[in-house]
Each structure stands twice: as C-alpha cells, then as structure tokens.
Image (cartoon, rainbow, N blue to C red; front, side, top):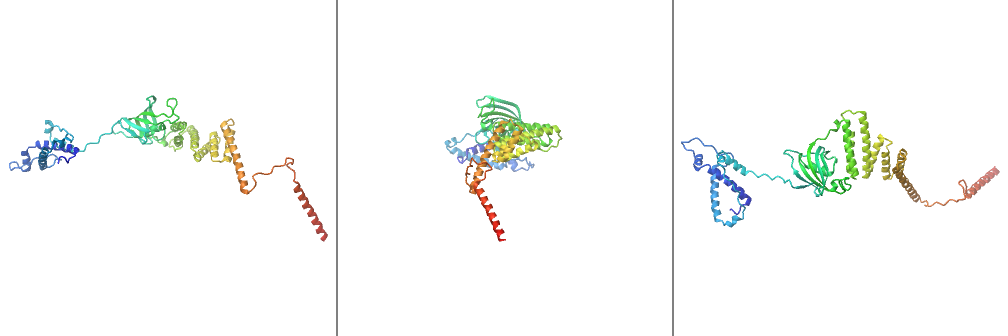
Length: 444
C-alpha cells in the first residue's frame, strides 16, 4: 500500500494527515461523544465543527486507517522507504495559534489549495522572431498593473546603444516615436510592444534590424550588431489628425519625412516609402481647425517634397505605375517641377515609352539647361529610340516581304533627273494617242 503511492502524493497526504491529527487532538474524545450523543443533563447542542471540516466520524475512520497503515509500514522493509524523498517537516502550531478558533481548519483548507505557478525568471531570453537574430531579456520588471503599449501609440523610451564589444555609441534620455510607424530601427519597433510600461530590458539585434550594411557614421560601423538597453517610460494614444493645428501638421509631416530620408539613405526603400506615405497622410487628412494661408502654402510645399521622394523610392522598387502616379500629382500642383518631370521621363523610359519620355525630358532640360544628369539621360533615350525605330522598320519590311536592302543611288544623277525608260514610255504613249486621233478623223 505504501509502495503504490507516488512521492509527490506521499508528501501532500502526510501534511494533510498531520493537520487532521492536530485538529483531532485539540478535541478530546469526551467532547466528541457529547457532540454525538447529548445527555439529558446538557440538552443544549454544542457548536458544530469549523466550516469546511469533514464530519467527526471521518476523522475517526481516517485515524483507524492510519493506524492500520502504520502497522503495515512497520512490517515493510526499510529499504523500500529509503528510496522515497524525505517528508516535509510540518512544525507544531504555537500555543497562540492553537487557541485561535478555526486556525487548524484554515490550515487544512490552505493545504488543500493548489500551489501557485512560479513566476518566470528574469534572466530568460525571449527569441522575438524565432531566428535568434533579435532577442529580449527583462532586466527590471514593470510595476504591478502596468500594461503594454499598442500599435499607433506614442511611446517615450530611454535608450543606451552599445556595440557587441561593449562600446557605448549612443544614448537617448528621452526618445519619442510612434509605435509601428517605422520611425526608428526595427529592433526597437519590434521589441518595445513586448515590454510593460516601467520595464527595463536588454535587446540584442543583428545588423539587419539596426543600421544594416551602411551603418551610421561615425560611430556605428557597417554590418554592426547592437545591444540596446531600453526603458519604457510612457505610452499614450497618438494625436487626432483632424484636431491638429497647421504648425502641428507641419511638424508631424516633417518628422515622418526625415524618417523616410534616413531609411532612403540606408537603401531601405520599403520603409522609406512607408514613412513618406504617413507624411502625406498627415498633410492631406481632413482638418477641423482653421489654418492660415501661409500654413496651407507650407503644407503644399511639404506635400510636393514628400511626393517627389515617394516617387524616387517607388522607382527604386520598380513600382512604375505608382511612381508615375506620384509624379503626376506633383505636376498637377507645379507643372514646371524639374524633379517630377525628370522622374516621370525615367519612368516612361523604363516602360519603353521613348516617344513620350523624350519630350518630357526636353521640357525639363529647357527649364535647367545646365543639368548634366538630364543631358545624359536624354542622350541615352534618343539613342535607344533610334535603335528601336530601326528595329521596327526592319520588322515591318520583313513582314511585307520587301528586301532588307534598297539599291544604291547613282551619284551622277540629281534629285530631279528622270529615268530614260520613263521618258521613252511617255513618248510612245503620246505618239500612239496622235495616231489614234488621225485614224478616227479619217473615218469620219
């Protein structure tokens, strides 16, 4: 019977039995008997046992069973019990605890409750993407009740950036950015949503999630993996675009445009296009606040810049239709915008529309004759267009069955010389007409 129990069950049951023994010893048999069979001299019933404690007869049965088990345990060999872990030492209750009503019952109920699960260790690394290139470890947990930030919220973090050798290269006491808008490197954008407000964490990131092959001059070299110590200070909801003033719109759009420029310089054209899109959204969204004429003009100039940069990013990504649409939007506001004309010509050239691209590039060159880039692009397009036309001409001749080579012109003949065969034929036709007229006149 003892051998059939598991080790964990033996420890738990022994603590329960010890608790039950103490409760039973605190109630002598005389009092138990009086509770079971009240005498005539004392007709008033005694107080029932504490709540949650089984009836008295259960304790008596358990005691009897325990005695029988004790006799069997004495008959078992000692080596069977030696393999089991030692039982937990249940201390004897103090005199004050024994005198408190229901103390043993509460101890019994506490013993019946399951043990809480252990809290996760602070020194465990979390593999965020599952590839081992971006990991996070909690250093200081957030306060109780703190929550995690959501996408679109504006967060404030304290950041310390170090190389793998421990050299500190950057320190930001208060870095503010919008979560999920690609305002910062991907290592921050992916790790901060997994932190509680008030938490401090260590993040190790591969170079592809930081500054990539370009690095960040002069402190961060190319292909550098970084260690980030991040403290999430605050997380608040993002601004309502409709309620922004003109200057607030300008400031927000400028921040997004600068983030796009940083991504473009690192050759991350996808993130650059995303930042330019967010800047344009901040400019063009409906407003419930009046703006001055100067603010509207400033927003229009900023929109043109963002559209031009967006077209450049789309051109790098070979998204020709989207780039053509961005350039056309710029030319609607500024028909003489040289950058938009040049990029539109390049997009049309990439699509093989040389006949449309050449006039646009000529218009751009007319606006800025000293631009060498436009000169080189236009010369290249003219050559490609000439080659395309010659290829098309040869193809048409082949389709119509004409010879591919025409006979060479005689150098002695001028442009107005008439071949002698044509002259002889014309003379013969004229003579034949005169002879026919004479014959008809003779008959008449």
